[in-house]
Length: 274
Image (cartoon, rainbow, N blue to C red; front, side, top):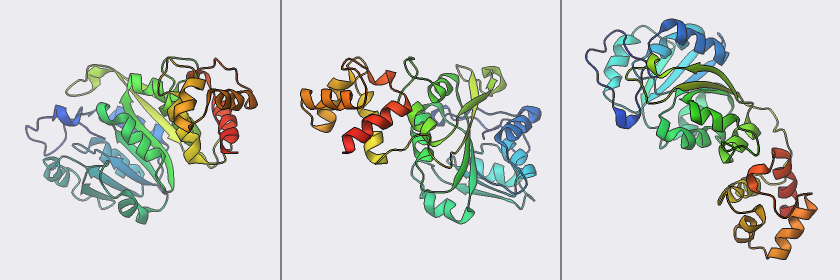
């Protein structure tokens, strides 16, 4: 996680385009590691170590830390700060383009810890939540509004595909709110730390995950439209066929996608897969 201050940072200037907002409070950082549930037998994949503040805290608790940093200017700073930390490896790369199975495959089961750039929060979480790797938990610092989208419930404005995916794959909880003034430079809004232990088994059974998430995407494609109207183009159904599918799943014709729970999405996916 990006951290301000620290040894060997000189007059480093944060790159706003990369979403760099640094934390330095050692008590706060130690609390975040505790909230992540990291222990001495755990391996951690850290996205965006920044100046290494949280990396140090993770290294003190974990068996091993692999940190992926996109900004090459930070590599020499991290090399100085983490010198002698033999359980830490820093790799240059972009999480959105790196070959993560190749990079992370040798780790075995691992936890993810990250201070996510606000503008990439949803793409990165979508990537992490669908990785074909043994992820044990995802623990992320995100914009407060993004945290609300992750834990949102049906029929609320924040509910959408991210909430469905996160709650299908994991058990997300907002465990700590962090004010903007804790960061340097301070972002425009407050942040939240979200922990997501990955489920061993999803809370609902679906016949085809690809179809399930295609349905979820279609349901929120046009939020003002009814689910029936979104289903027709997404699945090539006539109005009568879409209405029949909704009825078979126990849903009214005028229901909107934002009103569907995981269970309702699973029931409709079952009907559409038949």
